[in-house]
Length: 210
Ligand SMILES: Nc1ncnc2c1ncn2[C@@H]1O[C@H](COP(=O)(O)OP(=O)(O)OP(=O)(O)O)[C@@H](O)[C@H]1O
Ligand SMILES: Cc1cn([C@H]2C[C@H](O)[C@@H](COP(=O)(O)O)O2)c(=O)[nH]c1=O
Image (cartoon, rainbow, N blue to C red; front, side, top):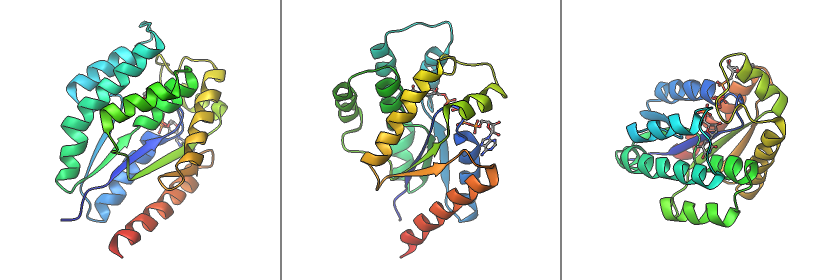
């Protein structure tokens, strides 16, 4: 049995992750690969309850409470969904994972890097995604896209300066982990972004068959 792969999609709100998650699921299915799609925070019954608290506009919380809830949801997600699925040889595609905690809580809220690294080690050990697709858009474009589809949640209502810091932290992660994280310029028309994603996936699949 070939081992399953863990692919994560990252980017600021409105970058196009959810749109491409659906595309990716269909693409992998067309190649005969069984996938489970999921998201963070969330992906389990408890994780979805934590998500509702974390995204609720009326909820106030300390930045470190926010981090702890993100990692609590992640612990559950790993235990109930991610690791069992990979063990069966299936692939997992997740709309966000730990890079989001480094970008939003680290970059956006200013939580200390060493605290995030400690939680990462505690919750994941050395486990990391096999591939992370980072969809890069300007803060202005991300905001425009989100505003056109739904009311803002607790994160989406943040000011542009917050998202500038989040984007900067994501770009820092791209530089820090070039083997794992692939940057896609998601400010282009949809068909062009999808074509870039298809090129990356075709490369990954050809490595797998070699
Ligand atoms: N390249 C693109 N060009 C134009 N519109 C796009 C593009 N990518 C996504 N969109 C549109 O932008 C909106 C937001 O996209 P999507 O929901 O996929 O973003 P997201 O990254 O998942 O956002 P969030 O993190 O807030 O859930 C959708 O209406 C989607 O159709
Ligand atoms: C995993 C994770 C997520 N977030 C934030 C990022 C987004 O604003 C929301 C999730 O909403 P989406 O529409 O599903 O993208 O949660 C975060 O701040 N930290 C995290 O670790």
